[in-house]
Figure 1 (cartoon, rainbow, N blue to C red):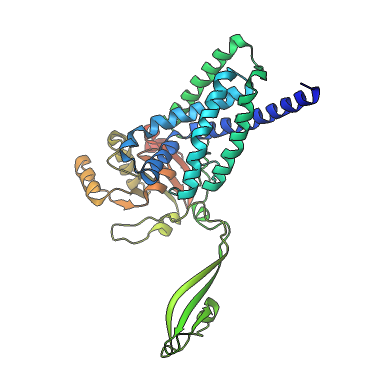
Figure 2: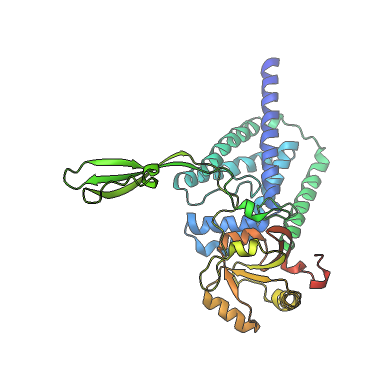
Length: 381
């Protein structure tokens, strides 16, 4: 083999290793620190994409395992550790997920793949194209794996991988018990939530209204501007047929889209609480049937009573059915009311069930997993 060819192969190998390794490390890390977020995404796939509700109990274990495998494989490929085995793992990984993401892109059962957690949101087609590049990279690594030398001695590589794997599981376990150590979501501490609910860039859409002449059958298009100016075809001659939209620019939607808080009568009270002039607590339980009851009894109930005496509102949010709410209230012998909010967004606000959020005039001040909810007197206002 000529020196030029060897050099080209060497360069291609390094480019492929760096690209594949760093992408996998980043992807595995941002999901390892948010194991519940990954589990929720698995649930979306099981329910919306494949109709496999019976697999829901495996969502969290699968999320934990897949995230760590992705993290470790990326690390091993980058540093050339046990390359004969890890190259096979990387190849099998891409052989499974590339066709899967093509199917997801074609059928579009979920809005995004969740391949980079909440850190970077890719469309389904962008995810598939990304996997094509990763597949090419791992194929190059696989075919020339015998030419890769480990950056760590052969004696230490197994120990290094073992330590890296254990640290990965410890990181996920910590974030599962508490909250993600890095929060990529729009509900992170310090964010002004009303601002997060505004479109980053409004969509540009031309709307046309089609009218049909009753006598001749002729159809005309009337722009929305003309309709707003009162230029509506005479009702005795023209009948409305349909509305047509022409999207010029889809824009960039709000980070928090379609979130609302409804009271027991169905009124939207979102603006009231997000503009409340002072501190306010949100107690978030997307599903009361799955909520930790001891957290309510030992932490939330005492905090609620002391906050009430201090004049700080406590808003309880859930996506549970009214019958489940009433059952929960009876079992815990509590009288506070639950406001209704969308299940998916409640899971996004705080990765805990229940979780506690402290806000002030729409700004996220702090939030806690149920195991870390402090006593009222220990909270710094």
